[in-house]
Amino acid sequence: MKNRIVLFLIVPLLLGGCSSNEEGGNTSSTGGSGLTSSTSVEPPINPTGYIEEISSIQDTTILHAWNWKLNDIKSRLQQIKDAGYNSIQISPMQPKVDKTNYATQSTKSQWWKYYQPLEFKVAGENETILGTKAQLTSLCSEAKELGISIVVDIVANHLSGSNGVYNGQVYTQYPLHSYNGNTDDSSCQATVQGRVGGLPDVDTSNSTVQNKIADMLCEYLECGIKGFRFDTAKHIETPDDGDYSSNFWPFVLGKADSYAESHNLDKPYYYGEILNTCGTGRSYNSYNKYMSFTDNKSGQNVLNAVKSSSINTSTLSYPTEQDASHLVLWAESHDTYANDDKETTEVSQEKINKAFVIQASRKDAASLYFARPQSWNSQLGSIYEDGWIDNEIKAINYFHSIYNKKSEKISANDGVFVNVRGEDKYAGAAIVSMQNVTKKTMNISSLKDGEYINLVNNEKLNVRNGQFTVNFVNDSAVSQQY
Image 1 (spheres, one colour):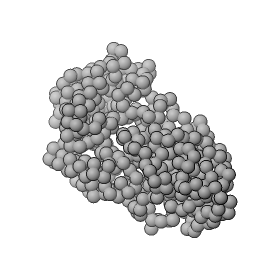
Image 2 (image 1 turned 30 degrees about the vertical axis):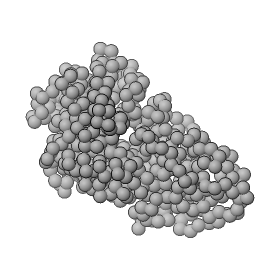
Image 3 (image 1 turned 60 degrees about the vertical axis):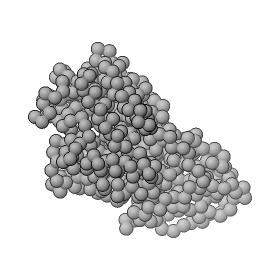
Image 4 (image 1 turned 180 degrees about the vertical axis):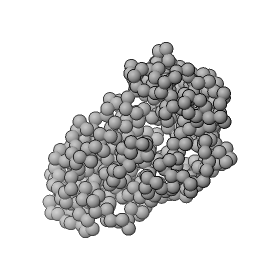
């Protein structure tokens, strides 16, 4: 068993309101996730006795099962549900350029091939090593029984190739944009017609392309997919892009919506990858009428605060300046972990978890948890039973569900982040210390006096006159009189 001593000294504390106790009393509390093995799947106690209605994937925390095989995900569905996730994001299921065996591949050198597909369709037999269409349908069916939604990654901006030329297997199938440069944010044309990594940029204004991609979404819906993440969504034009505009988004998503409605399916959930900015002269408002989207700078700012052991409320603003109901947050992504810059590769899992607790405590935003492999060079598709199932992650997943519609009150003082969700006897708080402290007295006036439960370890805690002491200890509980 891994003893998370470092994490234990700096763990978040997650409190859930329980019955009112005006007399106060003794409390026994520990700091948490280091107390038991991270492979434990016992869910935290739900102290309020209710969970707000989960009406959309936007209301959930999403497990990014990065490059996991479909049958491996299916075999872990109950474990994933017990860990508090209500959605799972899977890797692109389009035909892949290289289908060699996992044993010869590593995350470092091969993961990107899933983002260079050969076609706009769900992969058929022997077209991807993630699984078959029948396995995808089976996964979605079993996930639905557990109340879990499956989100699939979509590559619609480009296909496989290099230097603006398609891979031979797909050459001449679809028209390309004539712009010769690579993508950058300097102009609208460079943003929406440039080549991502030198890959040939598909002309997404073309009706043949649009219908093919829309048909792929409908094929996924037939399999039971509930949501779609659009890779490089920023590089596909909107109707607001002037000379470079098209009706790609309203047409493609509209066709998927119509399919879902005609087949008595839930309206699909959509979110797009928009990194750093929308590009010169472009606006997030051009996307939020169609989908949610990533706010990667938020994750970067919060993780930097954790790494520097200092946080303030300005760190917690959303750089996109968009309403949280349109945002997907994270502490890290597959890009920050596995790209050439290695932005988060060497950041400890403990720090990633702390940043995720902060992000997932927020109101209205969806939060994506990237399931790391054991190491940078682990075999592609290997599953590490750590991080994504750690106690504080299970706790914040439940906290997110319990309070997903409730108000939030953020503070960041003296190296401690606090987010109080809800009011009166239904209030709870996510508390994260940025520093290595063993004990800290908190004053949170918005918490009603009474008995609470630390969702990280199911220990009881009493709050009296808004005051209580947080005990960050290793393997024993410490009682305090209030």
